[in-house]
Length: 364
Image 1 (cartoon, rainbow, N blue to C red):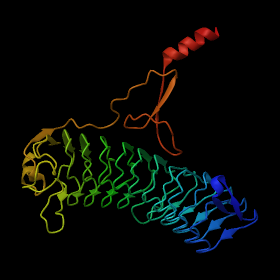
Image 2: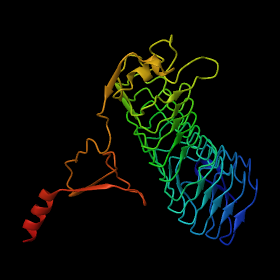
Image 3: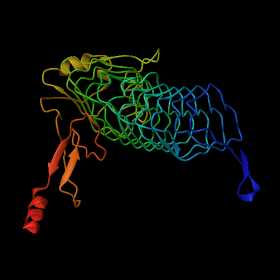
Image 4: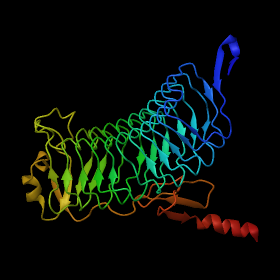
């Protein structure tokens, strides 16, 4: 269908029948003048490349009906006029690889019941926050949210054991993210270039941060490596320009790996420009009786200021209550206020008894 719009510009639109069940592979790929589509109420599946490179497609919001189950790979790849909201139904199970690759969508919900988000599904979008439910245990591939420059907050599902490679690479506005207690590995480039991230709480069972995993997180002020830590990949902790304190609870120094043939430690080169490496004079707090081990361990010998201690930052810290007109606040287990609680997570709930007493007095 083609109709005239403002300024005699043709508006090219496809109207699908409501009983349509699926849209096939490459059905409308490279329909470069297509501006608007409807998503039929009976639709269950869209196949690979169905609307890829429809460079003028701008339907907003793009709403999928209850009963819809799966988005195939690269369905809306390079649809750069998609700048608004994606609304997914409670029935969706799978979001395929590269579905919204290099679109500019700003909002998407991830319903409870979603099971899979595949490789590069939201690469270079413009999302501001994401909350992935615990039902989503299949995060295949890599670079799922890479280059989302505007992403500020993210919540990941409890139960996953690995943060995939490049997952949040170059998300430059990312300020708040949880690493679930089940995670054992932070993948290659997972948080590289997250330059606004001041705080990152590593889980007690974490074993490995792979190469360049936390590189160039240059706003980080403190990090606590848990006792379970075993390996740090090459350049995994390089470029922490603002770091004030490093804690490592491991009785044996985690093995430091070199980066390729460069000889770089996880924290930087022994002879590097101080502005590009992590400062080597930052206090490094380690368990009592381990200083000699750390001083003689390759990679850890990058540092010059080891301090033995048995006082490590653990548990709930710095829980504060806002002076809002509310008697209840919700926090996660490290003291961060939660505005969007997720199913299956454990939270701390604080109650203002002053508020309750005042309410009871008024009721009397």
